[in-house]
Length: 575
Image 1 (tube, helix red, strand yellow):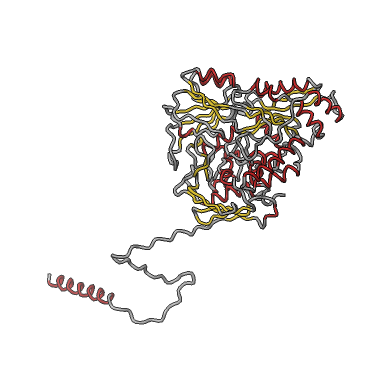
Image 2 (spheres, rainbow, N blue to C red):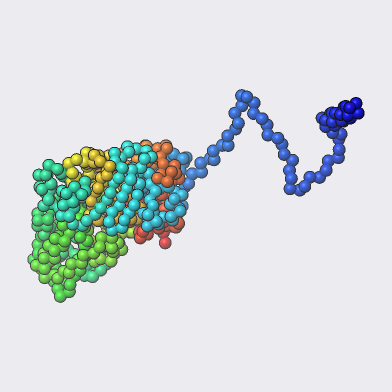
C-alpha cells in the first residue's frame, strides 16, 4: 500500500512540473518561413463596455446621368441626372412651360430600373408581370376576356377601399348598358348618346358627363393618291356637312369643330380662321379642276370602337360615305381591328381614315405638336414646314397673346393644306351603378378607381376594347392607357376628376426662371410591386429607355414611342 501511495505521489509531481513548464515563456528561436499562401493574423480587438461594434457603411449612391452632347440633335431634353437618391434634374434645350403636365401623363411612368433591364423594355414581357408603384397590381390577364387587378397593400398613398378591380370590354354600347342595368358590371365607359336619358331616369344608375376636351377628324395621308393633291383635300373639306354629323350622331353638349383644338384650350383655339363652309357644288368643281378620277373607289378606314370624340363610328362612316356619294365620289368602308388600325395609321399606311384625340394634358401643345410637328407620327405623311415652325415656336413661349398669334398662323395653314378635316368636339360620359360612391371621371378620361367605393370587395368596369399592352410608353390607345394607370405612376399626377397637376412620385419640384431646368424631389419609402425601393436612378432609366434610341431597353411594342417624340422632339442617338 505504501508503494502504491509513493507511486501516486511521484506521478502527481511529474504532472505538476509539466503544467508549470507549459506556462513559462518560450526561449527566442529563429523564425521559420511560413507557407507562401499564409499571412499572419491579428486577433480582433474586443469592444469595451461603452463602445458599440462598428457597422459597415452603406454604399454611396451612384447617380445615373444621360446627356446629349449638345442640342443640335433636335430634341427638347439636354440631360437627366440623379443628383442624389431622392433628387432628379431635367435640363432642357429650350423653355417648356407645359413640362410638368407632360411628365404627369402616364406613358412617362416610372419603373424599377433593374426589372426594366431584366425584361429589356419589352412591352409584352412587362405586360405579363408589370412592376409599378400604383394602387393596384396585376393578378391576371385572360386575353380576349378580362383583366383582374388586386389592391396593393403596400401602396404609399390612399389605399383602395376594395380588394379586386376587373376590366372587361365590349365594342357594343348596347351590350355595355345591358350589363350595367343587370348588375353584371359596376361602371361603363361611353354609353351611347341615345342612352343618356335612359340612364338619367334610372334611380339605380348614375350618369357622369365629361367635358368635350377632344377632337374628331377625318384624316388624310398627303403623300398617298389621290390625297397628294391639295385641291382634292380642300374639295373633300367642303363636301362634308359637319353640322349634320354632330346634330344626328352626337349627344347634347357636343360642338361642331372650327379648328383642331377644343374651345377650352386657349391659347390655341380662336375663331380667326374658321373652317370651310359646307359647299358640295364648289367641292365637285374643285375635284374636276384637280383632274379627280370619279370612277375610282376610295377606301375609308376606321375602327368600330366608341370614343368620346366619336360615339358611333360605324354610323358616322356611313354618313360620310353618303355625303361624298352626293358629289360623285365612291367610298368603300374598311372596318379594322382597333390595334391594327392604330398601328397602320401611325405608320402612314392609311390614305383616308376616321380618327380623333382626347387631351392627355390641358394645353394646345398636346394637340398641335403631336399631330403636326411630330416626325415620329406618319399618319398625315410629310410634315408641312410652315405648320411645324409656328407650332414649335409657340410651345416655347409663356405669353398667351404671343402664343395665340402663332396658333392663328397654324390654323390658317391647316385650313390651306388640309391634312385633316376637323369635325366635332364630342361630349361623352361614363355611367355607374348608384351604389358606387365617389364615382367620377375627368376631362382626360383618367377615372380614379382606387378612391371609389363599390360597397363590396370587387368593382367591375366595362370599357370599349381590350388593351394592346399593360406597359404604355409605346402605346397611344385609351384602353391601354387606362389599364396602365392602375399599375404605374408618374412624377406628378393629375388630381382625381380634373386636369390639374399635383404631387405624384415626386412630392415637389422647382423650376428656374426660364423654364429650362426642373428639379424633382422624390417621396421616400415608395416601393415597387416587387419590393424594390424607388430612387432617382429609376427615373433616369425610365426616361432614358424612351429617349435614347440605342438604349437596350428602347424596345416597347412597336418601337415607335409616339408620345415621347410628340412631347419632346427627336430621340437621342436616332439613326
